[in-house]
Image 1 (spheres, one colour):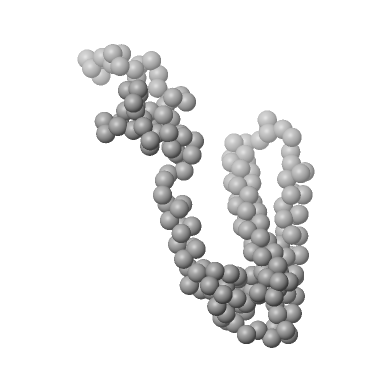
Image 2 (tube, one colour):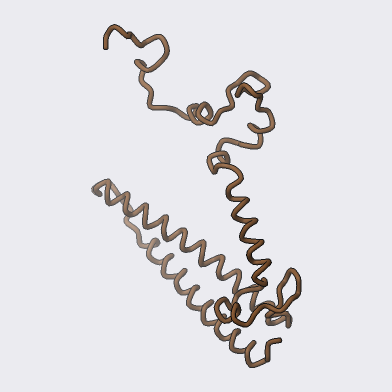
Length: 180
């Protein structure tokens, strides 16, 4: 059981981390508010680097926002008097765990279970199926790779509907094996 002094110490740490993380988020937003309007004179490598940096910062922003959500949950638990107890089973969270992760609201067993579930969910289907309407494809797919209407349901055919780099010479009937 945590003492009031320990809870106050954790609350202070959580508030400091929250303020620091919110500062990071504000600084990232300011950097991209002052971006260049024209990319006409930029070398393609410069544009690629800028895209990489923006994507990296986007990922960091997502992590910071998730962290802030966890901190807010922990601060709410302090307010409600449930801080230091697992929100699933109600067991005491180990002091060592709280010292490392003061934002923890789950005991180590339930934290591992949650992480495994999230990891398994992310591995279930390829991300491309989000664009290709996977639920509709999976529901109507036949063993021969066609749907109920006889249309091809393989991922390549669906992506190819958006366009391809084939030229007229690549289409069926236009290949002359004697010209090679």
